[in-house]
Length: 409
Image 1 (cartoon, helix red, strand yellow):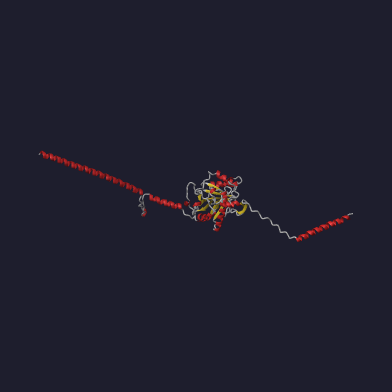
Image 2: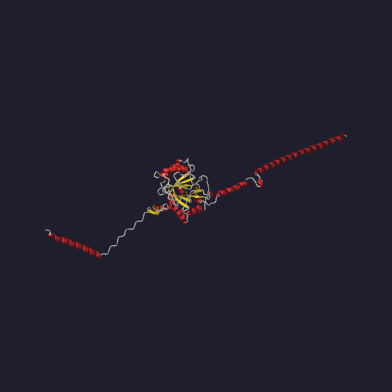
């Protein structure tokens, strides 16, 4: 019944086979097509993000390309305002203790991290310091730090200068007891064990969300510091950390150096307008030789902004105490101004000291005697004249009387 359809199906299959054979022969005659290459990538726009290595955490992060140019532009080390302001005595308000709370890092800090509702630990500590300000005997400044280099620190650790101690693991519930024990009463924290800090500590302001100048100048300064510290083999002696706003954005790059002097006293010196080219001088002159870099010096912890202290009067590690020598010179000048006096110590405790006041009194007595003598001499001369006049008068009287006597005879 379906036999009439068989020829038509065979014809269809034959036609299909002939077509495929024709295509196969044609493909053998044509050259092979070249593989298609992907199009080249488009260049990124000027403001596109590039990946750079962070000097703070050591991992790669995304940073806008134009930030790299700002080091020499409007916000970097060649901005027009550089070196225009007076740096000396710009640490304001004055303070005597610096507390650093280790908390995240500059990339996570809000413009005012101590007041941010999202960062409860910094906010609670800052609020407690303000509330107990009248009870804290030492003027205290609070600053955030993060990504500490060379020392073991994590979020919640507290570094205190000039005491050079560290408490680990401050939490929101322990803020009040920490402020009460350590800052108000000056006792060890009941909930922690203090650890002693050693070496010199450099804090670089890198708070970019607060001011772009600090955000641009801070990271390259830290990168250069870490490079120089490593090349000089000072990794176990000098430690670098980023810190939040310390005041004086226009002086960026800003940094604070805490280092012990020859007597072990910690001095916190502030520097401004610091560039990567100044880093070797910071390490060699300030930390190595104990000499203040006067052209970059802003002031120090424990000094009032109105005192007008000069950099060459500061006492630093391995440095010369110019202030003592100046006092010595002034004492010499004062000795020259005082009345002449001398002292010779004899045997058996005998002293032949001559007091200048005694000399003055003896001199005044001599003057009185001279005046008295001159008065007596003057008085004697006056009586002598009167006596002579009386004698002359008597002689004249005798002469007149004698002349009358001769006439009468």
